[in-house]
Image 1 (cartoon, rainbow, N blue to C red):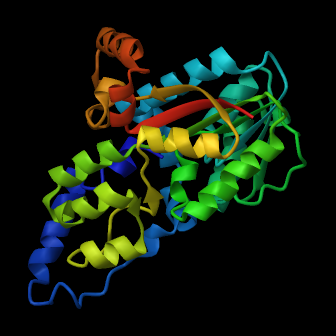
Image 2 (spheres, helix red, strand yellow; image 1 turned 60 degrees about the vertical axis):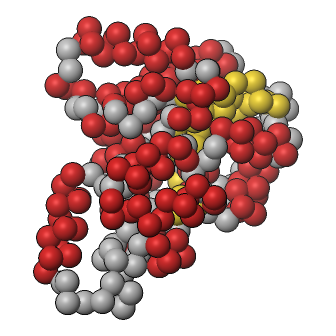
Amino acid sequence: MSEETQDTGSGAERRERSERGERSDHVDDHTRAQDLSSLEPETYYDEYGDDEWNRLEATLGGHLEFEGTTTYLERYLPNSGRVLDAGGGAGRYAVWLAERGYTVTLADRSARQCELAREKAHEHGVADRVTVERADLRALPFADDRFDAVCCTGGPLSHLTDEADRERALAELRRVARPESPVFVSVMGRLAVLQNLVRSVEYAPGVPAMVESGTYDADFAREHLAHLEEPGFTACHFFRAAELEAVLESAGFEVEALVGLEGIAANVGERQELEDLDPATVEAVIEAVRSLRTDPAVVDWSNHILAVVRA
């Protein structure tokens, strides 16, 4: 998941919602019917389409997420082998891995994202090393101990809003990974999204509940965002860093690193188009972000928190 989708109240969206509100002021907020279709992650990503491929290079924030993730992949991956890209979307990481010689299986629930992943693998000349399957994190169709490394990056685990579902998904990631193999899990951070909610006045009624639960779903939208015609994001559980570490340890993983991918550029970088920035500026920001990525405070404030663990 992306910084763009965590920014639940972009300027364009806010203006559009404001105009809709002006046109329908006569409708009582609590009786207005909401469009909650985007809260289903599979539907959301089917409609999101190419943006899921583009987002990691469209903005400074996306670039930092990708650069940070690949830095830790390079550090912890085995020299070769089979890698599962669970919830891999349009295939950015699958292509990156295949270009470095790994045999990659990408699994994702979205039919459109799977289609895009196949297209991108062909475009980049790595289709012979990338297999794409529609699959659910909670019931992966792979044998035990099949993969030499497992990636679940970009936030797929966050889209499971039920705690039991997250536990099942983590058990599945551990099951299909070989003993002692590295597993990479990144989730969306709660503090970063809270800052966005506070900044967008129309979302402010939900802030106390988000502090407590971290879960953004249909129940949350109905209870706290009934004044909006649509909630503007898809279902998600936003993590605190300590919470992520605890659930990974409960699932039987040994946590080796916690990383704040956007770091000190959280909630800033996604508003800066990468093509508008001087390369020297980008490199300076990357250098600063790298130096603080594992600072506990920085980790907890990041849009995406990456955990490197052992199965």
